[in-house]
Length: 374
Length: 247
Image (cartoon, rainbow over all chains, first blue to last red; front, side):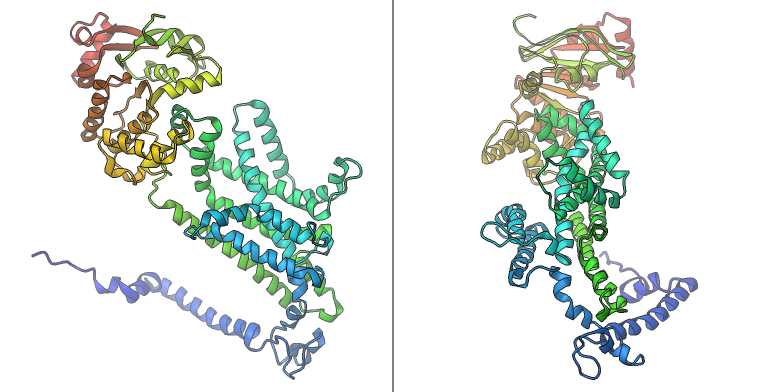
């Protein structure tokens, strides 16, 4: 009878893992101990500062904090960590900007709808996914009327928008619009028609060769000059145009990279089956090219989401802008740690989510597919 | 062009840069005829059959397929491609689609066939190539021979009048060549017009109505298999046959 031999105990299980990864030899063990010591020093300190000794709404005397002088750490430097009261007091501005309080329910509904619109994209096994996807497609139109006004809603001018609202509007619209435009530009650049290919190449190279800040100024100052007289373009829309153009140039190059990885045989097989140029690209080439490009697509999208903070220089107050505005308020002077920590945390939650989503997509799309194999 | 010719190549010339890859090629193929094209590598045999469905453009001469002349006219090209199926050396299955989806894609999107009907058709084609049990797998999970048979089924699903085979067994491991050739023999016996570029001389002897031997961009010899293998005219053909049959 064949006896099944098991691997030696010392190489499996927790003990085996520890030995192989943390204490493989003496340098390895030394580094492990050093890192453990650093974590031992750092973690209790950061937990104490952010949570245990921090003020949330009341200081250590039990008074409700209304300005920086009442923070525990300003009353008694020996006592107290972060003073989160500034976030608590200014929370509304961080999330909605200067959106009128009476109308704020519209923003809340838009946030909820955004979550609902993302749901079918994030979760492929959702029941009735098709109908949810229809909602995702019409969501931008609904969100426009909901946030901006019209169709019976009172108009709320975009200069009252701010904080997370602006960050999400810029990030989501930029990413969502740049994707199809980028695909068209990438296909255009590879087109056999020299005029189309040259125009796309010129566009991509010009936009990529210019810093985003320059494009933002361009959108703010020069875009109105190109419009017919009498038509006034909204400030946020001008910035959106700049952000979208910028992102689509990068997206085009990322997708072009994916297109180049598709073997010519795929084009030939599609053509020999009688498929037209568009069918071939939509059904055969792009699904494979985009699959290959998921990591860089998410990479540039995360980049754009963070770059939206640059709109502060053209006077639009996004999440970071509201934070800086708060710091300039004499009531909250000197609380920069708390504010930057909070703004970073919010950005991190969104970008980390995007990064995890890309990992999930890669895993999901890899099943059963042996790309590039004969 | 004679009345019953389904493919007619007249004085076809093509260059890759300065390289004259097809030189005054003339070929008439009748309906239901099975042609095997052979010749050393670089002789232009693949280029010739790729011109027939316009994967390559010829620069001089005329190519007429089923009464449609191949020119720059995109509509004509589309119509010819609907008539002509092609099987490639590297299979070229779509790796992101299952076997069944590979086969149903073109009928659904090019022929506007309802999905259920296309799936039924796909299963029938898979029966013909003898792998119905692989319908839901992905190309990457199949052996080379199975992939090539799926590729044949995918072409057949468009119901072509003509099938072109571009070295269909050259990328296969030896033990898989037979399963693909068997399918091709069945197809030939079923009356399909076929042009096959191959070095499988056993296959050629079994099914070919006519052998075409190419060298340096020209058709050197055209003959029945019997005459071609036993009594070839040109010295170039004799040399080629002696090399390929005694390897």
